[in-house]
Image (tube, rainbow, N blue to C red; front, side, top):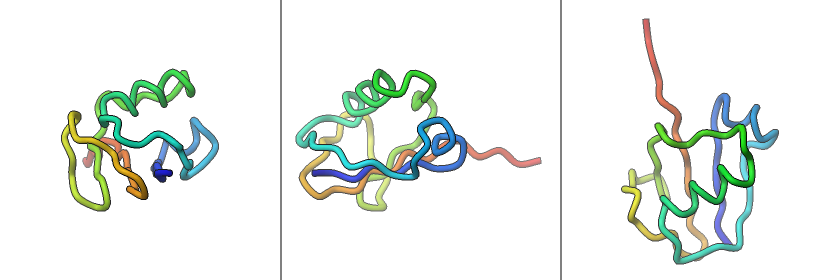
Length: 77
């Protein structure tokens, strides 16, 4: 089981701040695609990803008990 965290507008789009998923040993890219298929309004294409509080690339595998966070872009003004 893995935990996936969402922030800001992502939470509003899916109605939750986190979800538990049974997938393990899948890449971040595959996880993103599955989540976007499940939640069609959710876009994760421009987000940074962290696994267990460390930034991770799209090809990194998600393992059992990992916490994955999708961090939306931040803009200032």
